[in-house]
Every structure is written in structure tokens, then in C-alpha cells.
Amino acid sequence: MTDVIYVDRRDNVIGSGTIRFAVENGIIRRVSRVIIVDDRGDILLQKRSTKISYPGLWNDSVSGHVDVGESYLEAAVREMKEEMGIVGVPLTELGKLYGEEPDPPHLRRAFNMLYAGTFNGTPSVDPDEVAEARLVPRAELESWLTEKPSDFTPGSFMSLKFYLALRGGKFNGSSS
Image 1: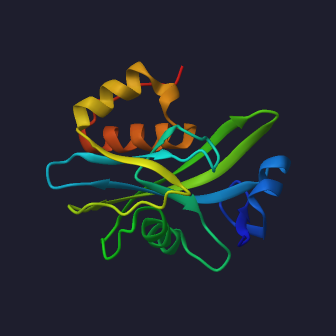
Image 2 (image 1 turned 135 degrees about the vertical axis):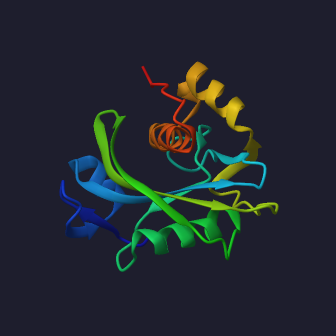
């Protein structure tokens, strides 16, 4: 497994190592997240496989750690190809979010760079990482996030809420 980048509270690189070591020691990592939409504005979500963290929960279209030697954008492009078989999609940077996710007895800490892109094909999912992929209309996603936030990984809840607010200013759901 490739080492990931460790950063301080200002997102300055302070080292690298395994994800596990970072989680166990409260070290902040870098994560790239991508929201893929089709021409109708439906949002592609993935359900995480049982073989990875947060098994069976829904996630944004694509997400993954930034490996040593990569930028946030390079990690996003790599993860789109690895998880969903999507290549050649131009991405727009939407913003960087800091998040802390409880993972008892630890606390996962990460800067999350969020990107968006448009794709109208059928994804080719990696079954080791993705159990299911589904396009969800915006209104349905807004309701789902409000009514069942526990269906989503903490990081994806944060990024999807940010995306929906940015794209329409109406969603203000919370995870509490």
C-alpha cells in the first residue's frame, strides 16, 4: 500500500505514512472527493463494499487519500479511474473542507478537497471498493440526507451537504 500525505492544521505537509498510523495517532490526512453529475443534474453515489472502511454506507461519487507525490487533483483523477472506471472528465475545484470523523476509539482527521465533473456514461465499478453505484436526483438526495444521514459516511455527508448548498443554497441539513 502506498503511503499517504500527513499535514498540519494549515494543510502544510509534515510527513507521510500509512492511513492506519494516521488514524491511530490523530494525524491529519489529505482526501480528494469528487461529485459526478449527469446532464440532468442527477448525482452519482457509490455504496462502499464490505471490504473497506465504512462498509455498506453511501459515499460521494469518488473519494480517496492523496498519496505521496500526488496533488489533490491527481488523486481525484486516479480515484475516478480506480473506483468507477471514469477517465477524461474535466474537474472543477469547489473548495476544501476540514473534517473530523469519529472512528472509536480514534478520530479520523482530514482536509477534503472537493471537485465536480459531468459524466453521462455507465461507470465500471471496482467491486473491491464499490458495492453499488446509483444516480440520484438532487431533490431525492436532499431528502435522503435529511431523513437518514446515518446512511452516509461522515465525509460524504459533509461534502454532499456542501455541494448541494453551493449549487442551490437551499440545503441546510445536519448530521445531528
